Image (cartoon, rainbow, N blue to C red; front, side):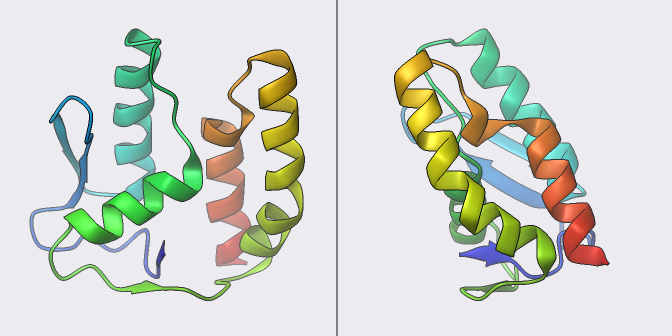
Length: 113
């Protein structure tokens, strides 16, 4: 699932619940929330952030959040092509390209266009 309107504040904001630790994060925009969760997970190195799982979690955790299964724009289309490649690179090198904050920001920006 993907958040349909990532820049629109929903109720008290977007919510992410980290299932393994029970930690809950809130922010007004999806990008702010992604940054908060990314900082938490970088501090707790045993966990990684996957952008697809992140948005799915937000869709499940945020009341009144409008989500869709479809492609929102060019950012999602590019993500669908490059995400499997990033997964292979992450597996081979131990990186976390799938949770890249810059990639997430570019995806959101391209979807707006």
